[in-house]
Image 1 (cartoon, helix red, strand yellow):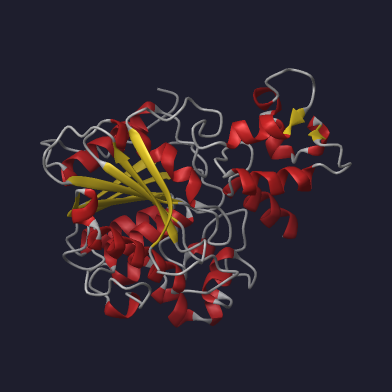
Image 2 (image 1 turned 90 degrees about the vertical axis):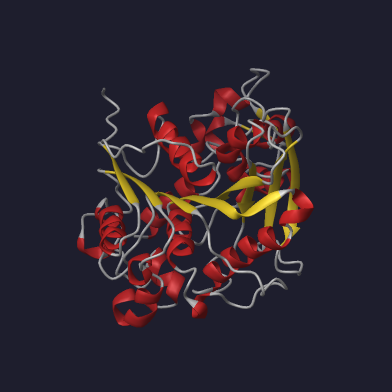
Length: 372
């Protein structure tokens, strides 16, 4: 089990394969991997999951990765080796939404340098995954940058306390505080406080789903930050393969034993989920689904080895039963993420446009098959 969780953590965190860490964080990882302390990384020194990108990082092709090459690959402008962020994106990092110095309680704000609208801009917010115990907000930029670059949206990426620092409901308290910060500072940054979309992957998908269903759940608001007079409701939710029903997640095939006391879900709530059912229910989006919740787009791989596809189905069913607009898109044969089909992002774009910009469009629930 320890080996499975180690591999999962590597996949879910921003390793060399998907990282956009800041230089100090990248430097720490570089030193950890540099076993012989010679100031450079041979391919064999990298974790297995990171070795596949060795040639991309080794830009001078000398057979080693220097600290300079490592930093360049992880730099925000490179977005993990992808093309640079567009010139129309103004980035302000590490804004404290909790009015303290905790690095996990901060957000990054992305504004278009040139807007295409005289009206306040709707906001696309990204929340990272990582099993609630890893990951960081730096990867959010690559998801929301195209929206901000268009000049039609603003964007943000939220960090939150991990389960090693605080157990549930600290994570949703943090996310709600970040939403309240955006609303409290909407006028200053020309944001529309009533048009905020939240998009998350895996554990982030769980948290955005919770934001969507708990705008009317006072006990989940928390008291983080100074903007408590503002509400934390969001306009719509994009849930990519997030857990939704803690008490039932272990009933379906998975590489993880979700009911085990050391599972990510158990660590999140502070004990084995089947032995702490009230907390598990409280942390489950399906528990809070009710009329008036935020419209939700769920996209989930049918062969997800970590979060069973049934979790997406359960959320969709709960929302539909409550009368909430919900679209469930099956990602045929897809695993835990890796939604590289252009149609996946097209669906997200259409959904966000519909609920943030009143675009006259219908979002298809037709399954997306990578073989077609």
